[in-house]
Image (cartoon, rainbow, N blue to C red):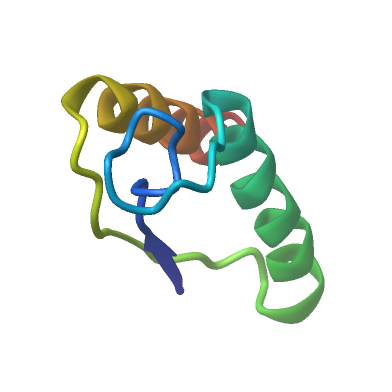
Length: 70
């Protein structure tokens, strides 16, 4: 299960972690590699936080695109 929170995006006013959209593409890619080995490629992703709408849109799009394209 992925808790897909996007408040780590650099535009978000709360976390200050400064991740970019490419990071939200990379992370689920790595989790998909693990899922391939451990659980027959099954993944559940749940949308969590994100408080800047532009950052949330960029991050969620990168995340979902990775899940869809593998």
